[in-house]
Length: 205
DNA sequence: AAGAGGATGAACT
DNA sequence: GTTCATCCTCTTG
Image 1: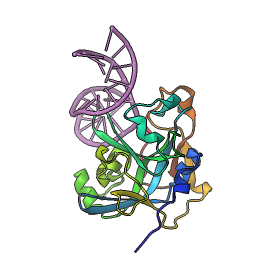
Image 2 (image 1 turned 120 degrees about the vertical axis):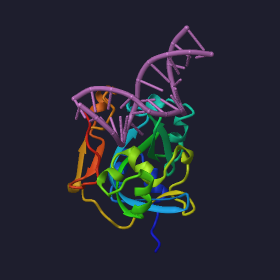
Image 3 (image 1 turned 90 degrees about the vertical axis):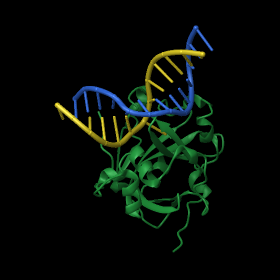
C-alpha cells in the first residue's frame, strides 16, 4: 500500500504554528536497522527561529547544531538533550528561515513489537511513545539521522498523509514544555495535542 | 581549555 | 514531589 508524502509546499510554508497543527494526524514512519515502524502524530510543538527565545536558533543564532534548521523545510533536525535523549524535529519554512516542529508523541500503529523491544518494556502502554525522547527511542531515531529528508521513499524517516483529518475543535493548545526560562515566549500556546488521546505526554511543572 | 547547563525520562519516596 | 543519569554544545577565558 502506498501513501502520499507531504509535499515541499507543506513544509516550506512560513507559518510554523499552522504546520505544527497540520502535522497532527499525519503518520511518522521510520525504517531503521531493517525495521519499519510507524505511528500517528498526536502531539507537537512549534519553534520559530528569529523571534522565539525558546528556539535553538533564536535571534538567527547559527552554530554547527542549528545549521540544519536553516535548510528548506522537509528535513529532520535531531539533537541530543540531557546527554541521553534524541529529540526529533521537522524543519519547516523556506531556506534560510530557522523554523522547526518538535514531534512529542505518536499513537503507535505499526510494528509495536519493535518499539516495545527498543524501549525494553514488557507491556504496551502510552509511555511507549509519549514524550519526545521516548518516541525517538521507540522509532529508532538517533542524532546520526540529523538532516535526512522526510519526503523521500528511500529515507529512513518520512511523514505520510493517510487522509486522517484532525478538526480544529479536536486540537488542544497550551504552553510548551520545559522552556520556562524563555521569558514571555514561554507563554506562547504553541504546544498542540489531539484532544482525548491517551498517547500524549504529561505536562511537567 | 574548561565548565555549565539543557525542548527529558525513569526510578525513587 | 525529588533526584539523577549522562554528554554534547555553547560560552567564556
